[in-house]
Figure 1 (cartoon, rainbow, N blue to C red):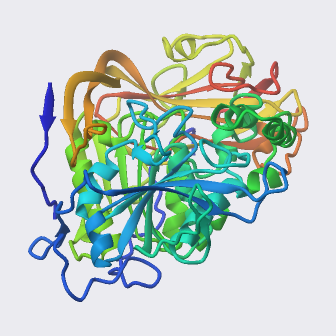
Figure 2 (figure 1 turned 135 degrees about the horizontal axis):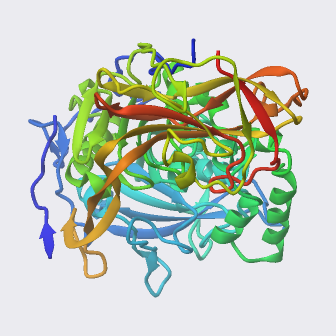
Length: 603
């Protein structure tokens, strides 16, 4: 079944847990001013602007749009072949604006996935005509936005698809390859066609908005952190903010040699790129878990003060691919620098909001780009800053995020309901324990696990922000992983994933080779007696410093804080909260050290 959407909608302590963390109030967003952010409103309203709604409308012919492929020059030679790398850029833009000389803004998706893996839930890849010029651009962005007066630009980052060179997985070369394209769009760099003829981007205002999910959104974060002129807004979806935090947690690796594997998965299969990937493996410090210069190069948080673009980020609260600490720490860093921003948090895992909140997402994205790239005063920045899915398809709007700090003491007792205990308990590592074993039967004694349990909650609570678990421990080893899980118990139907349906909906214009139609998904729930609120891992020696670990002194008390993953969840009255503490976790991580025992001070 296919539904074609033709309407245009305008949406104008004792052991205790403390929840919530304030990171600054929302700053009023300036109107786009044509300098640092946004584009100036045109003096004469063009035909694609609805003056009543301050919205672009689809007046340009998508079927006859200009489709072109160019190659942007760079100053780097990442494959050491003696020639500077070139970056392949595919463009779809209205022919009518080219004829009248009207300049238009750009929506850009820079990606390593256009040939290896595809984009979106249906893994669409770029396709080309017999002359090698872009024909089909993945996703709905060109179908929807080109008729409204935007250019859609798909960038093959260095070392992927039709670009030359070798990728360095989130490093300087990949980021610079995208910056080179933005520089070309703003007249600061050169490019050529496939036959070598010079080509300029005289058709654009130079105002660029980057969008993308996962790796693509990560590139948007990284490019924004350079402060490149011309980038007006980014829309990172389920995106990484620090590659160190993507590959490990507090010194505990999730897997071994992930960076060279990923580079090989998306990049060119050549001896030169094999050498680059070998360097990635040599420099990732998997064996120590340390934060080094290698990881600092791939840490966009440290450069958040350079961000000039506005940010509309979305993330799934069940995402354990790009975990929720990525959005929360990026959000906090942007808040400190008063970056105009907006946040959507869904229940889902690694899923684009186009899949789970489709109509609203398209409308909100339309308003966002109209405001930041077209300079239209549509009121999008007067809307609530945060929108959170608190139950399947139930959304609450909030003025800021996370919730204002409000500590709520909840006593937890060792293995039973009641007040906090006294003395110490011991946890001896059992790498064979599964999470199912750990969270089952919270009142029973299970070797390798210590469980601390609350009484039934006297009222509903909202866990909003990043929970942490602080423990006073004494170990028999110089280090050990420590794993913490925050669990809520009570029989309920809980979100359990999404499933594709047989119904398609269509967005924007279409051609014979691109109908702009996509299958919808439905949310799934499952009845269960518990839910994991959040998880977290740390190597105890890295508790005070990720770059300079301090070995524990066996037999000596020390304090270790385990950061859990960010969450926003309302836990109903009557539920029971529990904290499970274990050591190594071989299901979720690849720990370097196992076999220790620790004593925990219950006071």
